[in-house]
Amino acid sequence: MRSYKAKMVEPIELPSRAEREAALERAGYNVFNLDARDVYIDLLTDSGTGTMSAEQWAAMIRGDEAYAGSESFARLAESVRDVMGFEYVIPTHQGRGAENVLYGVLLEAGDVVPNNSHFDTTRAHVVNQGAEPVDCPSPAARDPNSNEKFKGNFDIDAGYALVEDVGADAIPVVVQTITNNSVAGQPVSMANIRAVAEFAKDIDALFVIDACRFAENAHFIKENEAGYEDWTVAEIAREQFAHADAITMSGKKDALVNIGGFTAMRDETTFEHAKQRAILFEGFPTYGGLSGRDIEAMAVGLREAVTPPYVSDRVEQVAELGDLLSEEDVPVYLPTGGHAVYLDAGEMFPHVPKEQYPGQELVCALYREGGVRGVELGGFAFPGTDRPDLVRLALPRRTYSREHLEHIAETAAKVMETAHEYDGLEIVEEPPMKELRHFSAKLRPVSN
Ligand code: F0G
Image 1 (cartoon, helix red, strand yellow):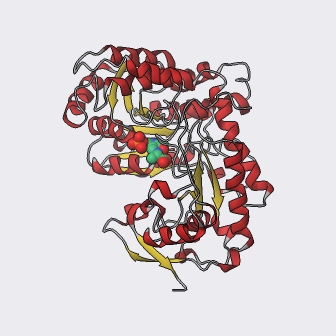
Image 2 (cartoon, rainbow, N blue to C red; image 1 turned 90 degrees about the vertical axis):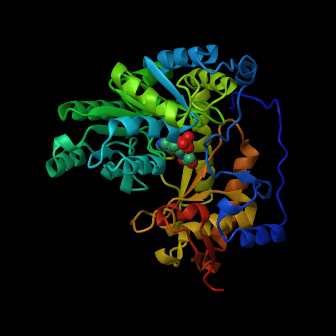
């Protein structure tokens, strides 16, 4: 049951098959190069693409545009204190702005940063400080079919192995990403959050949470971790942060806004240092590159994210898409995560070699068959890794209906039927930084 109805609509149109084929060719078989108007159902990301509530729009009208000390900032700080429990807050233009501000003051060249899995911008900001990011995902993450509930967990043994290797002094910060976007949007358990907090304390490091999808993570804890059945999502959300020293947050996810983010912390000295860096990169530390109205929307969205039934509705819709795809025998990473369904292109196109990018081929096929735009997060996006060739279908929040989900599943089923016809793709043009190639590279079908 959906807990909202539409108050404003935006027309969408499925271009003809000939138009889709022409658009794909023009885009160099890279859906980042498509015009959004040529996309029927846009599952490229759940970041900033959702629908705001009437309360959020209403709050925007009262946005206080004062350069310093606005009332809108005071309201955001209060929301962050109530919902997440942090005293000090610095707004930023989005999540990566928060990463730049916080890691810019916490890291130095030569440091090592373990994380259950770095998101790509987090990794880039760690590297930008001259530090080394190290992923410590749970071994359970590797199995797309196991029924384990918290595959996003941080592998504490891997953390201690890293300490053996580089020494505790090299690790000033330990990070945990909730939910784990790079591992199919899988959640982490409260027990694991506590264990990471203890690990960080043990090696005298700060514990930072990448909080983007904190409400979705809290929902999974309520559903699947013994002892939390009777807690509210709001209580669990706060408890997740109780042992953390600081967070980075992209408001474009679980603060339910189109733009915005923040970093928050407990330590006043870190706060003072971070403010100076925020002034340099984001803006005065009470607006951080945002308008007062953006900040208002984020202050309201944060509270909505932990107010039932928002998040159960949200996660159930993602599971519904997973079920519809599974019913069509489309190979789906299980269990489905918080914000997206991940398809296994390696399994859908077993005859397409990894170096011919089965994931990117699937992304193109979904667009060609049904105007559906997903994103490849396998061998094309992460060159030189042995990651499975997963394709992410991220659902924007409060945006699509059951009919749209059915169209997505039917589209994937059509691709399955003709899977043998796909031969894969080859790159014809790529940017100098291979790590960024999935945003702009151009490809062509290998049979050409
Ligand atoms: N951390 C995680 C876990 C993220 O998923 C993202 C963004 C960021 C940090 C950076 O936040 O985009 O506001 O600067 N993820 C989006 C995605 C882009 O599509 O998964 P941002």
